[in-house]
Image (cartoon, rainbow, N blue to C red; front, side, top):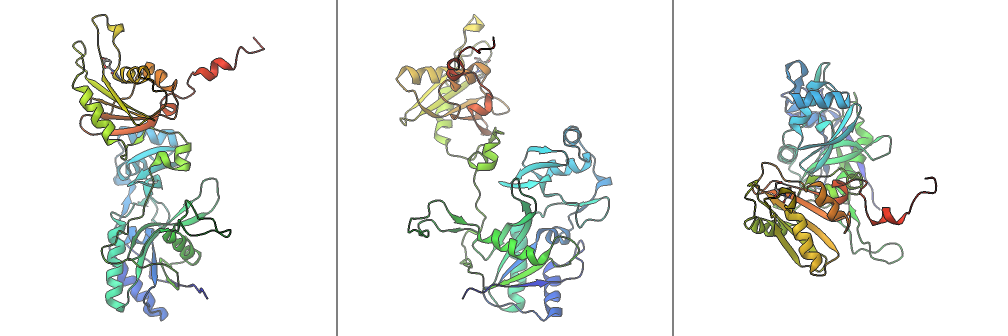
Length: 398
Ligand code: THU
C-alpha cells in the first residue's frame, strides 16, 4: 500500500535574522513530531528569504532610468522594478502589475520579489542561494535527528491560463528532483516517450495543501512515505530545466532573442574563422557567418565591402548564397559573429534572404567576446513576406 503522510510544522513567525532550522526544530518539538529516515521536508521560499534577512524597505531603493521606463510600461512601483531588474537575468515581458523574468534558467514572476508576508512598504527579495539554504536546513535537521532526509525549498506558481497556485521546487538537497520514467510502459504496454516525473514539484504541491499561503504560520511540512529516491552523496541534485526556445510555453510566445545556451559552438567558431577573412576597408566592421545545412555541411563567409557602398554584401547573405549555390536548400542554423560590444543581429535584407528558406532557421548572434543570443528567423522578422504571400493571389476585393 502506498501511504503518504503530511505533517505541517507550525512555527513562531519567522523574522529577518532568525535561525530557520532552529525554528523548525522548535515547532516539531512543540507538536511532538520526529523525523524518520526517508522523510522529505518542504520549506517555503518565503520563510527562507525572510530568515535570510531579504526584507527590503522600498523607501531605500533608488530606481534607475530603465526601472522607471519599465515601471511605466507595466504599471509597477519603479523602486520595485529596480529590485526586479537587479534580481533577474532577463525580463521577458509582462502585463499590468506583473513582469515575467528568468533567473538561472527558471521563470519567476517579478524576479521572485514578493509583497506577501512582508511588512507594509517592504518587499521580500528572493533567497540568495536556495540550494545552499536547502543543504543547510538538511544538515541541521539530520544532525539533530540522526535520520537521513531530503529537503526541498518550495514556492508557488500558476500554470499558464489556470487560476490558482501549485507548488514548484526551487532547490533540492538530498532528494532527486526529477525522475526519468522514459522506457517504462504505459497502460497499453507502449513505452513512455517523453515523460519525466517532476517529483520535487509534486511534493511541494502536496505540502502546499497543508501549508496555505498566508497567516497559517506553517512554513515547513514533513512528507512521509513518498516514493522518492534520496540522493546519493555527490549526486547532482540541481533541478533540470530546458532552454526557453525549446519550452512549449515560452517558445510559443516567440519572444526571442533568447540567451544562447549552447548547441552551436562549432558553428560560432566557423563564423569567427570567416570573420578573419572579412573585406571591410570602409567600415572596419568585420563580420563572419556560418550556416549549417540539413545535410550537415557548414558554409561560412565574411562581409565583402565595396567603394560603391550599396554593392557591399553582409556575411550572412554571402554564406547563404554560397550554400544555396552548392545545392543546399534546407538549413538548421546560422551563426553570425562581429567585432561589436553586443551580439550583432542580421540586417533587414539578410532576414528577408533567410526567411526564404524557413522561418524556423535558428540564428545565433554573437560577438568575438563570447556574448551570444539565439532566435529563429521568424522571431527576427515577424509577419515576413514569403513565397506563400505571393501564392495567396490578388484579393477579390481590390
Ligand atoms: N554587416 C554584416 O556583414 N552583417 C550584419 O548583420 C550587419 C552588417 C556588414 C555589412 C558591412 O560590410 C558592415 O557590416 C557595416 O555595415
